[in-house]
Image (cartoon, rainbow, N blue to C red; front, side, top):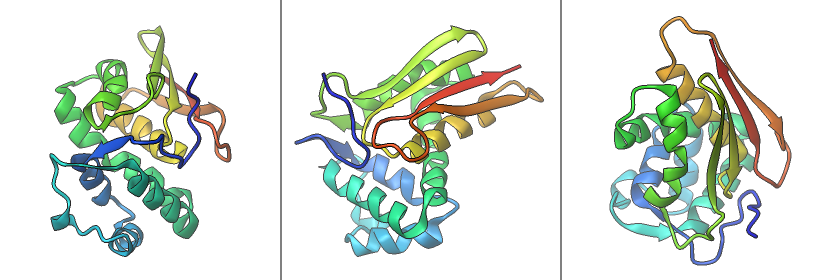
Amino acid sequence: MYIAKQFQNPEQTEVLGNLILSLQDNLESYRTDAIFRKYGYEKDSIQPDEWYSGDILFDIYKAIKEEGGSMPLVAMGKASVEPTIQAFNVDTSQAFLMRLPDVSTMYVRNAPDEYGFNITKINEKHYKAYNNTPVPNDVFYGAIWESVRVLKPKNAQFSVRPIKNYPNSDEGVVIEIEWD
């Protein structure tokens, strides 16, 4: 059984260029742009429909974590939400969360069978999200938080709370999501 370790890409796993591009536009880009350039990736050098070694992406994530801490990674997760909402064509938090496991097949190929984001529905307004990928837990947290913020019912209060393996674990985080 595959259990993901943070920043460790499974052998031969590739990511779609569109995923890399979605992570470059974020609130902490003043920090992340230099790291992308260091690894030879300018925005115009990434082709959205081409596949790239996942090793490169996780090397970049690791460098960002080492140079900037958690906030740039959370910002990258938040930045990935809008293109994913458009790709999923969803308009509710529930629909987004239930489609989240599809990210593993949309943006990643050649991954182990157990690789992915898993969602458990507790009830209509209560979910648990599990990260069984090498995607940093901070990126996963940022994406979950932003998706609920953007798609929740107007004026609803919400909570996105890590309940296991956060912040400093090599294994994937478990996040509890609730709104009223």
